[in-house]
Length: 399
Ligand code: ADP
Image (cartoon, rainbow, N blue to C red; front, side):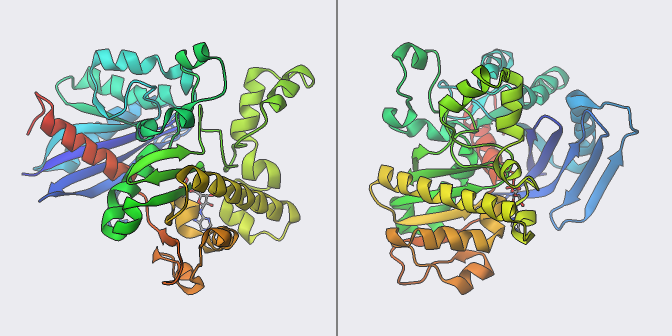
């Protein structure tokens, strides 16, 4: 009988899950999948690690499954999947750990209450992240649960990197730069020593380019600066998020165009970025295939902002030894990687186009002063590892 850990990543309309089973020292994914359309038409799919569908189900239109219904279904499915293995805990991805949580934490009713106080900091994500924790605490209070935060990895940044130039009482009230995508960066930092020991000790910029996109300066495995700040809208233009704006734009929208908070939120989170600029799609694949000038402009802007942020992060690091591309665009779009690398020639980046087209591992020339890598991120594995570690070390954890 092996130990098993379930990792949950709950969003506004879906819950993604992965089941990890301990095999020797490593944790391997047995099944993964999701329930989506939680408040529209719900659909569940579970796949084996080779991609074959193990189970699926659709609910009739009009039945709103919700987070609780989805979790109940997942629990039943995973119980059946576990066969002889023993579930030792659930690991959750939670977007915000505030200033308090610098590390993952075992969650009980008390911790959950603290996490609820961070809802105003991430109103679009935090409530959904917390919903399955609450349900699992109700249904199986004896089952250990661990929360892993997207913000924790960045708490090593120097104060100046975490500050806005605002009066101090606002910082005390929590208005500061938190940074996100921390589990992805932490995963990359955790495997970099095996892949490129020099880079792992040195100054690396990791580019997490997915629907949500950010970049992080890492030195000797620790976050030094990142492009995302108080919210996950700062920094690069993303699929539908604007990225950094002059704060004066928001005032103008309010004062002159009479837009209220909700309208502005919708604009900067859901209608901007690649979608807003192109007017065509938030999907990089579609834009790269399109001949339309606005699609080209959106891609140009995306690459231009990466170029600027890379300069800024290299300055924060005092130089650059390595770059790592990861996430949907970073892992799968050689065209974007090539442009970003060519723009970074002044930093000592010399891309090997054949290796870049092949798309995995080192994509810079041997002679390149800066080593460039493509590495698949694995936030779920990071959460599973944290969960196992915490349950092994916390009193009361099942062994
Ligand atoms: P999320 O932030 O939702 O996890 P992903 O990391 O899955 O996002 O990244 C999604 C993005 O990756 C989309 O813009 C998608 O177009 C892009 N992408 C995926 N595959 C490719 C590809 N082959 N070429 C270009 N872009 C791709």
